[in-house]
Amino acid sequence: MPSQSLESYLSGRWSRGAGVETTLVNPVTGEELATASAKGLELAGALAYARQEGQGALRSLGYAARAKLVGAVADVLTANRAKYEGIAIANSGNTKADAAIDIDGGIGTLKYYARLAAGLGEVRALLDEKPVRLAKAENYQAIHLMVPRRGVAVHINAFNFPSWGLWEKAAVALISGVPVLAKPASATALLAHEMVRDVIGAKVLPDGALSLLVGGAGDLLANVTSDDVIAFTGSADTAARVRGHPHVVMRSVPVNIEADSINAAVLAPDAAGGGAAFDAFVREVVREMTVKAGQKCTAIRRIFVPADQASAVADALAAKLKGTKVGDPRQDDTRMGPLVTRGQQAAVLGGLRRLANEAAVICGGMQPPALDGIDPDKSSFVAPTLLKLKDASASRAVHEVEVFGPAATVVAYRDEREAAALVARGGGSLVASIYGEDQGFLARMVGEIGPSHGRLLVVYPAIAAAHTGHGIVMPQCNHGGPGRAGNGEELGGLYGLRFYHQRLAVQGSTELLASLQAQAASLH
Ligand code: NAP
Image (spheres, protein in one colour):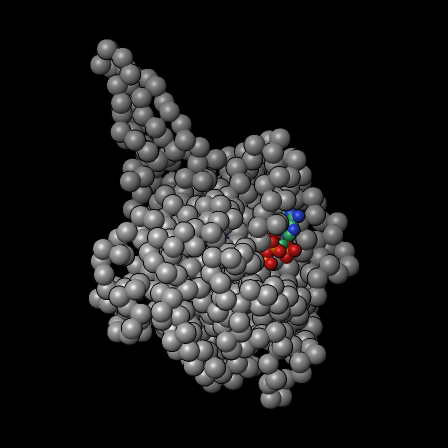
């Protein structure tokens, strides 16, 4: 693949920043694939163009017409899917299965929202609540409408899902009538760049509806207005900088944060000895640790098991992890590829060293694996690494350090109460999964750990073969979590549209409200 200098699509044209901010590489070979820079690009003008042109065009349409646009974007991407897979393998070190989660996850979310919003019809607002009477007079009432915001949706995405991250956010904003300025993470921007190039080239969206910023964020946040919204996905550190940016604070710009998360899987006491729930648990933990080399915000990082079974469970997991073929993702028998960059490899190995102060390494470890035909000085591999806590109650790092790679730690719990208390020490997570046959235990755990999560997957044997996976974000379900996970909310069907709308109470005569209601679709 010859190296290219990536361009941004701003103010209706492609342009390139000065110099090189980031070099994109193949994490197997270290080969340079592309360079990215946004230096010197006129971001205030780009935002103004999107507000003027994109907003105007999208606003003139109803939800169903915008749903058709989103469906057309999905069609363009589907037609070009084959080349995207090659890019994800080269730039993100994805296996074909990893690439499918990112690419098909993005296309699937676009299609889901296109279908869902088609049912809203050609109205221009959403009805949030039925009319309520406010006074004795019967003809004076109030309704709550949701009306599309007038600004730009600024989407800042993480490196691990250059496709899904882009389209899961864009689908919801475009359906809501809000133009998008997307900024992919620089290290893996090649896929987002190619996809947006195809969508723009196909002319399926109005001018200004979709802009792309490739390179650093520069002064982007200094140019947002209170009409705009920011949806950020990335690390908790960058999230704090985005949320705390003085301009964002001064103008009360709405910010949705999807940050990092130390997600848990919990094995119930009744399932620890084996059986369908146990098998489902082992399968899911191994899958979560190795898919995308553990670079998923939703991946399982803490594995909670009853104390008397902790060693047996760790052995069962280690046996499977040792059998996972790690290597060049272009080879068909490879099950796990590298991390995306040597910087990420160094961060993960550093994180493992911190965890290893409190935990024994059961398999894998802090040395990159030796792989046939792969140069360890140019590649970014980390072995699937399982740790086991020495003392669950005294340990801290396991609840505090996000190791964004193929690593997780077994945490032994004595009883239900301790299990719930230890899970909560993650400080707020995107997702947890619970595995068992005792319905009472499963229901109690939902109540106990629910408040510190955005989503729970509860695996009873009857759904062991049917469920969609701990780490897979379904557009029908809420995505986001409290506390360190950022306290954000995305997707969740029509609920996800709220972020791009202003909630508006309208007090008036029954006649006026009836006519407004007739021009709105119910959000519920
Ligand atoms: P990151 O370093 O925080 O970067 C995220 C994005 O923020 C990138 O596009 C980055 O651009 C941009 N950025 C950096 N500094 C900025 C600033 N001062 N102002 C505005 N934007 C700025 O995160 P990452 O390393 O790409 O992603 C890994 C992290 O994301 C992990 O912690 C993971 O848990 C989290 N994540 C969370 C979710 C979720 O849904 N909750 C999903 C995926 C990943 P550059 O790349 O150009 O620096």
